[in-house]
Length: 109
Image 1: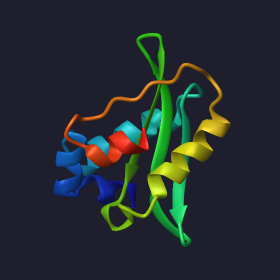
Image 2: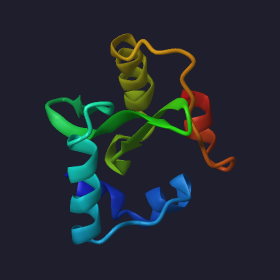
Image 3: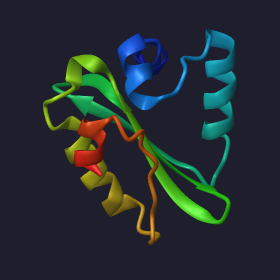
Image 4: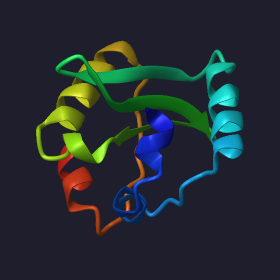
């Protein structure tokens, strides 16, 4: 489901991040899941896969990011998921990057 979520053109525009083809997507997630310093969680909503939330280190900073499938936008899914996730990842400070036009994500963060 993560692959399909990231193919959504509107989501790509909101995230200011292009979709990956299946091979690149699989390679990216294989790397993520093989790195013990990365924390990943699947986000469920009513028993459905709604997205994911991930934390990793980059340039000496702990970062957090998430991707929510468009059918779950506007339902508080990202806010709840990030709040719960921050209970698991206790490293502080923790940073996030967001496209300045992504008002919904700015509110979540």
